[in-house]
Image (cartoon, rainbow, N blue to C red; front, side, top):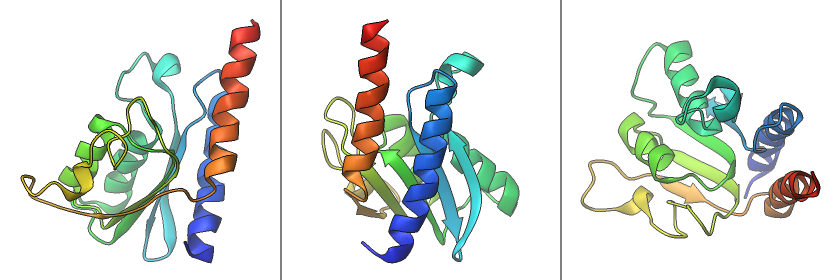
Length: 152
């Protein structure tokens, strides 16, 4: 983990908190290219009634639009929760260089927990993964959200 990893994950955490304030599961993401944030997003599945509106999925789409290209070579995705199969698959297809995530997802993690899409030799692209960056803070956001929801 680098100082930049922590700095960018804090921005993803800001996005996660924005999601929680909107009643969405607190997951946030930023996409960084050449040391600059080119996209940021948070979960909006409920708000948009869209099953693909995961934080990292939306951030990758925004990054492609911002950069004017679908190949996101040179980009790193920072996300507070380990990506699911859909989002990990999009990372393969977008040709990202790296994904950095906070909390592991024991129910759906596709970058090492249940699956490892990032290093599957059968696929046409592999990318580096750094896990556990600010993991406790990322997991705490999720715990707080679901604890509050259960109380209601």
